[in-house]
Image 1 (spheres, rainbow, N blue to C red):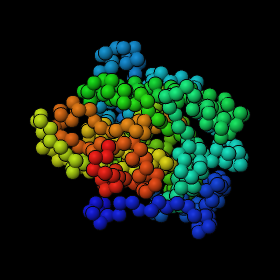
Image 2: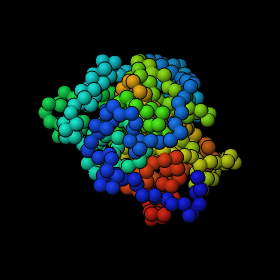
Image 3: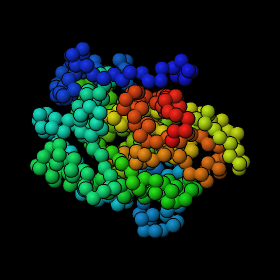
Image 4: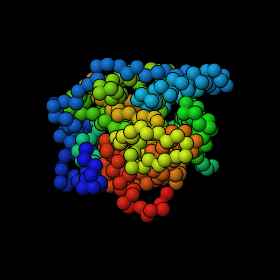
Length: 420
């Protein structure tokens, strides 16, 4: 992609205008379940076919039992496996992760009950313009082309106050009859938060920085929970459940059902991630990835002369999660990778997944640890606030494989010189 000064930094978002297109209404997801011989053109990604993976990703499976028991040898071994994965592609799975298997099962039960509701009831939780939370059918409320073949329910989570924010979301949008659903997802998000902080500690150990650094940074985070439902698709060769993207958030914790469909792009090939009932799939978002040449700042200690390359970025699940691909790269000073991935659909089986996107508090300044920068010898990424990237992808840019480069140019051109 041409990144010269003439490049359009902020192409207009392809918001749906149902009067103009007349096919997909933002408030009608019934088209996802209609048994028709062809799919609407809005869902077609590549007319010659998207192509599927034929090889399996050999990502490490990291046992966390020893870490939770305080076994230092097991902790170092887990950190070593995580380091190897993050230097290569940023994907790994964890077992003995401390999340109750019954809680995961119940979360799926409540997800299935919600998506089986009549459309009129689901629309009580419809995502409002400018809001990140709620129900969406194929994101037709936001885009008009290359729509994902899925329904989603998204809501925020934090534990920075006395109110149970997830329970409150379900009560306020769906009513008292969803009290139990809200309680289940409140507990699920709390379990995800606890696991995410443990993973942040292991990531710090793997990078050789203070083991509490990332745990403290994300302790007051505002994260995003999403339930994904992928109906069977009559033309799976033309559509995606979720298009190719890199999660702009910091860390993603995924549980997928046994149908399969997650694919990762590694060494110029799409590779499948095998579902495991006892495991959670972990991948880094853009907060932990590569480097930007124009932001190299020499350090007093052994400056490195290695070449720095631009990173690519796509949206975290298109949602409105388009927002975060820069953090991984920034927080690890370019050492770790966030990898292109997608969700494919099939003709016969529905697929479901539970996704927890770990994000910092919106006003947090994203910057790598000082000791890591000095040890590396270069500063590879500019400071920015999570809210800046969120604003960029929500208002100005539909995330793609150049989001981060264009975000950086936008940030420098639109913010005062001393902005942080």
